[in-house]
Image (cartoon, rainbow, N blue to C red; front, side):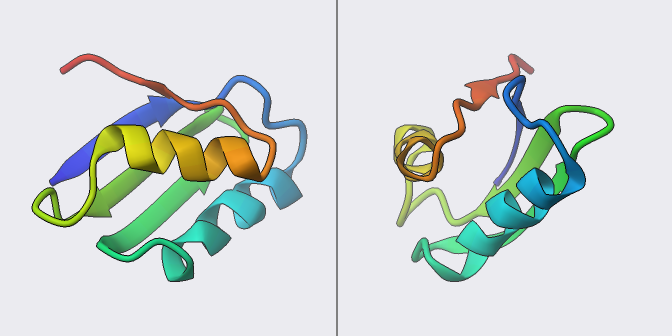
Length: 71
């Protein structure tokens, strides 16, 4: 499953790299692509192992507050 999030509190390109680093930290995540210019993050993950809420919690723990974009 792919899910798009708005991440309004990204302030620089390093923020995007920091969020992409979660890819290796969260079991069930296949990929994370974050864009500082778009203030967004797309996460591809296995929905049988991980929930959107768990992704948000992991980002919150490193200081970001992603908001899921409705389909």
